[in-house]
Amino acid sequence: MTRTRFHQNLDDLKEKLLVMAGMSEQAIQRAIEAYRVGDLSICDLVVRSEPAINRMERDIDQMALDLLAMEQPMAIDLRFILAVIKINADLERVGDQAVNIAERVRDLQTSSPVDLPVDIPKLATLAATMVRHALQAFIDADPVLAEKVLTMDDEVDEMNRAVYRTLTRSIQLEPACSHQALHVLLIARNLERVGDHATNIAEDVIFWVRGADVRHHVQTGR
Amino acid sequence: MGAGIEVRDLNAWYGSTHTLHDIGIMIPANHATALIGPSGCGKSTFVRCLNRMHETNPIARVTGSVRLGDLDIYNGAAPVAIRRRIGMVFQRANPFPTMSIYDNVASGLRLGGLRNRKKIEEIVERSLRRAALWDEVKDAWKSKSGTSLSGGQQQRLCIARALAIDPEVLLMDEPASALDPISTAKIEDLIFELKADYTIVIVTHNMQQAARVAEMTGFFLNGYLVEFDATTKIFTNPSDKRTEDYITGRFG
Image (cartoon, rainbow over all chains, first blue to last red; front, side):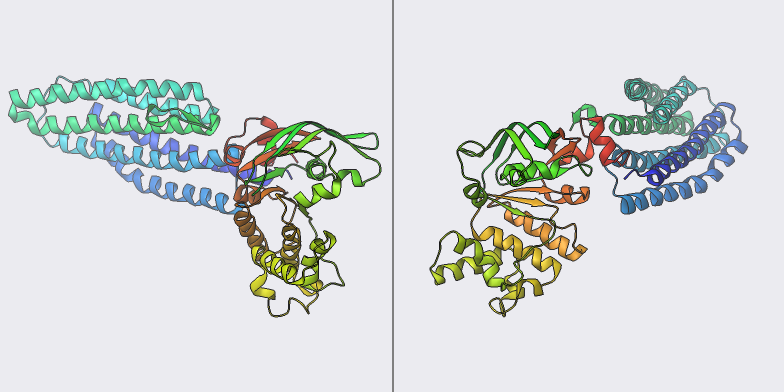
């Protein structure tokens, strides 16, 4: 009763999700680079990549749905497919955040430059590292690395709050920079969301490998 | 009402072949318990030990303890009396071929000494209703032969026959494996209903069926009970790697 074909299909599903992960990760890296160097052509690349990510999301969902319907998976296979469906949605949202950042960078480039006292690249590096580690945890089925991602989220949240405090003060002190400060504030928020999606992915990896639900800082395992 | 079954240190042999090893399990009352495992793992032998059917084979032997409520099945109780309290339904429906539907269900009652025709009629009708067969046979239940029914109906007739003698436990050895999906669904619905009044133990090769009907599931392998837990746990996150490998089709 060994289900060789089914397990080959699961490997194909994982491979496809990794392609999706590569596309989303590249989108967010490019959006960060666009912010750092102020390059509108990189913004265009990010925006143009979104339809492909959306298509891939639908393909993966369909593949997962077919496997659920045709194979009635159980135990670790069932958890794997559920995790893939959820990670897929998070990766699509990471792509959306990249587009949001790219569009704000475009808008910033049409405004007069201002020097704002916040370190967005540092926040971006941390959020991108979370995504990288969460995906590595998925590739290696490594719940320990996934747990590390969960601890990084607090740091990203704190950096985002610090950006908010700094920029609201800047707006009060210098209303002329409000437009630019608001865009940067929203970019920080987009990056904080990227960290949240990485956290979700890490939680899904833990669920897949250990069967434990660690969402919302509550651990429940059957 | 159903009764729970407590099994301790159960070992079984066919001749010199040791087929069950130190089985310990608490089968809860008024629940459906599924037993799964690859062919030859011992699950059918195990259920046959629960109502002393195993020892009907002259080379078979059992040691250990099986208790149904206060009754110690292997210590002082007569096998026939035990089988009245622990009924059994087999993989292949086996209605008595020369008997009508009515006589099939009444047979156990008559064997038990009941002679009151009105009472027998009442119990047969109630049993056919409980087995969800009454509506399909009520017009010809006394004239039509049990074997004239479809496979699914015959299996429900056998369930009605088992229910007529009012057991506390119903053992089912792959009761739907020879049936089409509609008949299977009817048997599964029936199991769900019967749980309120009986303790059900079902051996099945169909893991989806176990997941659908049973609250508890036991996994047998090579004569050992590897894992026994809530069905949701077994099918989403089993504790033993061998259970996981079996239910995910990595061996078997």
